[in-house]
Length: 189
Figure 1: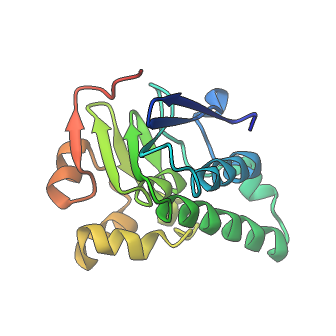
Figure 2: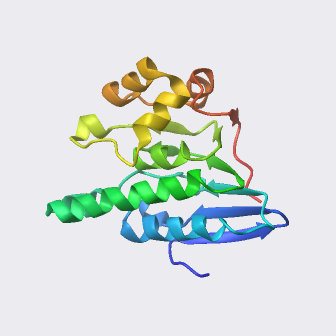
């Protein structure tokens, strides 16, 4: 398959899925959301791949939702479709039979956090941070991220992350259980 905002590379039994909206720091628009969902689903019956690594660029895992698109979704139906697409995206990654690893460098914001916590493991580079600014900008954290976040860090910490909009670096994320490992940088094959 070929996509405009996603690339897939194979290295034996490992697949590397890269978000490729570089000019927008991998902000989630409709196209990226749909293509990442298709990429994830392409592995559901793939018996050759044993692990799938999801990554962005060295500058950013994802800047979150593309706010230009969010603001242009004036109708309730358009907003509902965005929510459904994101929920299907996260579920497709969560339900993959392979081990899924989010390799995070730079920011993982809002929707980027929602997708990263849908993976089995999260590895954060020294430059990486989680940031959930939805309350600050007047949005709701969606894509079923809150139940996943509660499962990872517990209810009190999940409330703190969502309500206080604090940036969480790799050391804190590891201590709280939001990431599996941190490293100087994520290796790029």
